[in-house]
Picture 1 (cartoon, helix red, strand yellow):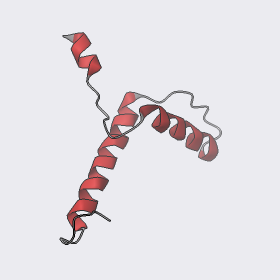
Picture 2: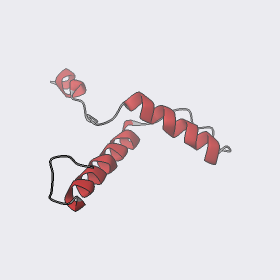
Picture 3: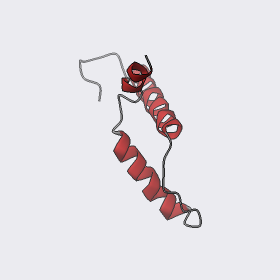
Picture 4: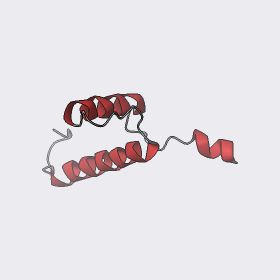
Length: 70
């Protein structure tokens, strides 16, 4: 059962390695006094939730015409 839970992708809209890499790069640039070297899954899951919310909002405000989301 525990192995099954570990195999579930909790962030299907993101490339986790890129999110972590970008977060560490930004952290180094804007908070150089803090030597962050790791990114937790809670952080990545929060970013995933924000991406889903942004997609939902963009679809909601998009005009109801045509077949393509622009």
